[in-house]
Amino acid sequence: MTMELDNVDIRILELLQDDGRLSFNDLAKEVGVTTPTVSHRISTLTDLNLIRGFQVDLDTDLLNELTSVMTIDCKPSDVPGLLERFEAFQEVRELFVIDGTRLFAKVTTTDLEHRNRFLERLAQIEQIISYRFGSVTRTVKERPRALIHNGLRLTVDCFFCGKPVVENPVKIKLDGKDHYLCCGSCEKLYRDKYGRIKEASDLEGECGTEGPHDGHDDDHHGH
Ligand SMILES: [Zn+2]
Image 1 (cartoon, rainbow, N blue to C red):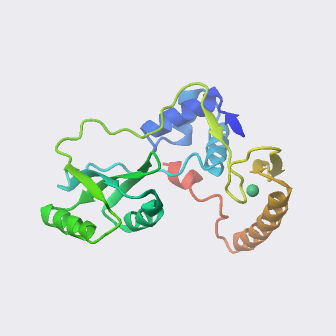
Image 2 (image 1 turned 135 degrees about the horizontal axis):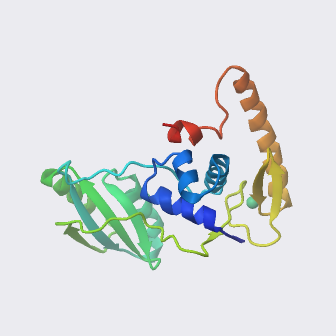
């Protein structure tokens, strides 16, 4: 199932993608809604896993680090194994599978020697049939990947099993929030799990600790 995002969601995403430090207040003013609306929308979009986090964007040039891009060709059957290896390399900062058969990676190394050591490690991997490696000599444009436009539709994943909700979605309201499940059995398991988490967090709450969902909200945006 996909959910159409309305103009408020879209405007919030657009502003946040440009500046993740905007406070709920700033966003509310800019969008023309109340602060609780902004807080509620962000919390929903986070629950739906669309907002994955709020990161800092560092200029690697100022750190004198080297960026390289590479494509790797391998047998289709070797893709999963190679992905696991590449994902584990600290130097690999972005990793994509292209057309199901080729890998594309962005690699950051601290200096030339480090880059050479990285390439030596690649030479040990026999599943690599061939690769092309190029050094980035100039970064011209680097923008967050989502293209924000009117009529954005969001795929909803089951809150329990994580698979896309396809047919007969189950929508339940717990603590004033919508939760989406792909089927009746996920709903049952989710209600059980949710009940347990809530019980635990209520107990923690009594000891003065925050609940699991309150983590990023005002801490991050309140300044
Ligand atoms: Zn499910």
